Amino acid sequence: MARKLDFQEDQLVIHFTGMTSVAALKSILEVPYTAIKNVSVGSFDIPLLNFRVGTSGFGVREGRFLVDGKWCFVSYEKNSNLVIMELDDQGFSKVIFETDGPENVKDEILSKVKQ
Image (cartoon, rainbow, N blue to C red; front, side, top):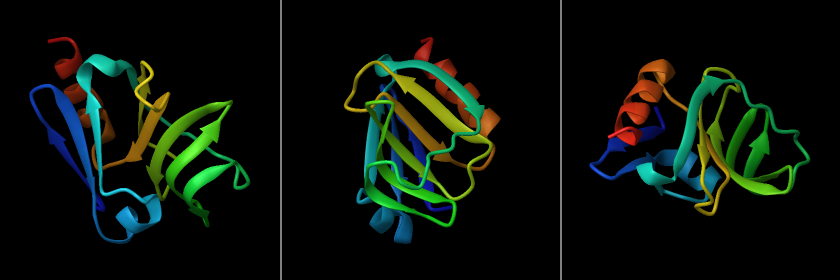
């Protein structure tokens, strides 16, 4: 997988590797648990022509996307079973990413948020 999750004491760190880091124009994203308002698993589709700083095409979405007037950070190849984190204004209103075992990842994030 092109994303590695590091559940640190006070933040989730997402490491992007290989072509994913090139496409997303980012190799690391840090999200403080205190900034996370909600976490869910689901689908998230972004129209191909949305304004972006990153890569969009053939179902792949990597980078920053302007969605409903707010910046979101998105990293996926398939737009279903994604982890969707709603944030309290940390530069992004949402962080959306693909990972193995998204329900388990959601539960792990929620357990850290509630500590």
